[in-house]
Image (cartoon, rainbow, N blue to C red; front, side):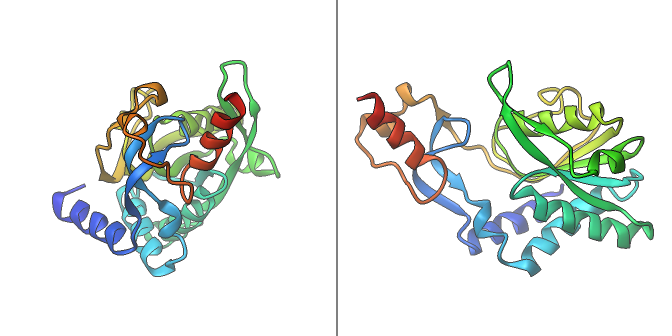
Length: 219
């Protein structure tokens, strides 16, 4: 993505107050001083449509047949990206999603394609979309679920890559496209300088509430 487009994306996130400063706990369990709150973007349909159009435009020549995302937030992205791809390609592109399963043997949450969507994915060229890319573990699991259903992953499109994730980190995804790359420093809880300074954890966004509950339970 060119610098002008990335700047426009960042301006949109800031205008919608989706980029926050403070003490946050990410889904990965790591702590950080900045947070990208994608939930602040989703209610603004004109903005989310425009952002998804940019993702669709990037993959318009990859013959995408199905767009899939991890539930829950990513469902909105899969619908909008599929909608715009349908318009750009003049062919019907489907938008589906993968459901979370329980903790797998590797200690990570897994994903499964059900509701009959596995049949829609089989033998098709599939684009995975996600809002915020931190470690890439969730979308990697979604990609594995696509392959298990017989689909072929042709790329990954995200609103924001905040973890410096590469296609190699995702098992060799053919194409990785992020509307914005934001380098946000993060720490394991025991090394968090914000905790050491006694700065309160934000409990409105992220996993701050869960972190504090676990902390009190272990006290």
